[in-house]
Length: 102
Image (cartoon, rainbow, N blue to C red):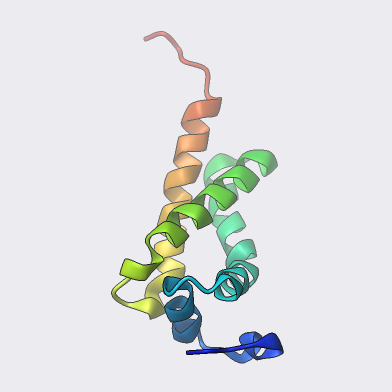
């Protein structure tokens, strides 16, 4: 599917995920724009830190985008993204928490 220009704003989630899975950078950008606040909210609820949430959001999107072509149900992208972001946020918390030596 070829979508160009402002038409991305009207593209369905399934179309965006399919195009991103095929490597279309505009589709990646559209998905990021649509879901960045949602992803940041997920990360912030885990990390309780603005900066850690920013880092986890970026890393979570990267993780989701690396395997987006294998996503069996494109309509479930938001849930899949949330899981990726949550995992990255937990990693951020572990990295930022000093080892208690226990």
